Length: 85
Image (cartoon, rainbow, N blue to C red; front, side, top):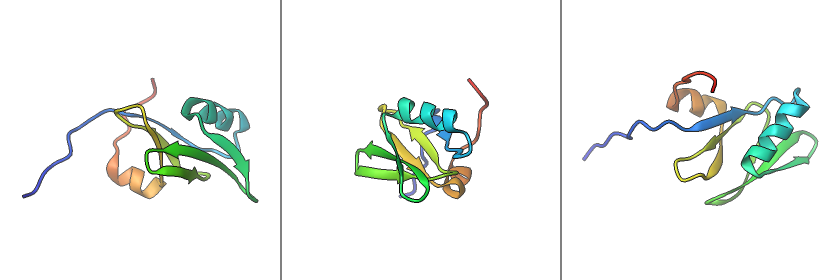
C-alpha cells in the first residue's frame, strides 16, 4: 500500500552561526544547548535522544511540540516555505 503524508504546518528555524543573537534565540526556542566542538553546534533533546544541529541545519518543531534537526538538503525536499510569521 502506498500512503501520502498529511500536509501539516510546522515551525522551523535555520542555524546561522554568523548570527550569535539568532543562534541564542534558537537555543532558547528549542530548549537546546549551544556547545563548541571546534564549530558551534546546538544539542537538542529529541524523542530519539540527544541530536546535534550544525551551521545551516534547520531545527523543526513537530506537531506534538517536539524538536529535531534536519539537514538543509532534506529540508528543501520535504518542506515548502510559507513565509515569516
